[in-house]
Length: 382
Image 1 (cartoon, rainbow, N blue to C red):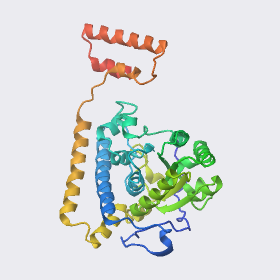
Image 2 (image 1 turned 60 degrees about the vertical axis):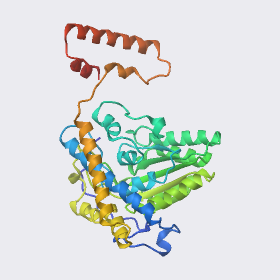
Image 3 (image 1 turned 90 degrees about the horizontal axis):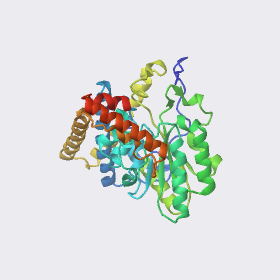
Image 4 (image 1 turned 120 degrees about the vertical axis):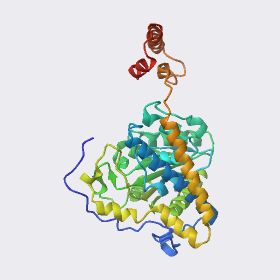
């Protein structure tokens, strides 16, 4: 995609104040600003804090591995942890999750191993984990296509009287796609148990939100589809969890879909191949760093006596272990079988596919007999 580099975006934040339960300083919010939602209990907040700390350490580690050339690309979620983890933590184990390419920390929180999450970014597999075991679809690179899949699955579940909910995440740029419109519309018309989480990090690669829509907030768009919409402080994990949990309960009870916009910011580049200095100002990045979601929750937990030093140390150690495990699995040489290209394509392979597989198998056998290096043929097969 080409970059729009005419000038940095200078728009102000939306005039509508987002729902929040903790302010930037980590103080509990009261009154109308809460939108009628309650602050989760300290045990839940401590668990969310733990998950965010581990997720950030994983994200920072993966970004470092990308810069070392161990991964082809990686879209960081640094600064967006509250959006992703607040939402994904509200799901039950039976529910389904439909992520985008930026939602790796949500997959980690869902219980997927680092090596399985990163297999596609390294080019080993198109998808490195069992989708059914984790109730998690593959990370979608095309914008908004996964939203339609979430609606389709949740619609089928409703027809079967299966009480599950499908949650999908989108970026602000994805809401400009026709697939998003179709997903929102079908979900509302069919009253599917679907929850849409829009992570409004304010840029679709280099295109600012002001050049995508004149709507004051993306949550306002829900009105046109006939479903509830909530504009939430996406750096407040307590608010993201509370609003998403309520939307999931509503969907499960037959109340239909909900659109939740989390207002946040992408601290890192779009991917390692992007140069964000060409379209945004450094002062804006610094402004959002001061609204850090982890520091905000940490201040509240400390003030409530819910984060003693030994617990904080234990959480930091757990995060370092995840980083070490990630380094180890990404440093190890991957074992690639070129014939795996033909696995999991069709339940009943077609004749043409079997013929192609046979030809490749013969070529590999011939190469092995002549003493050629398997790695060379594996690379050619990719």
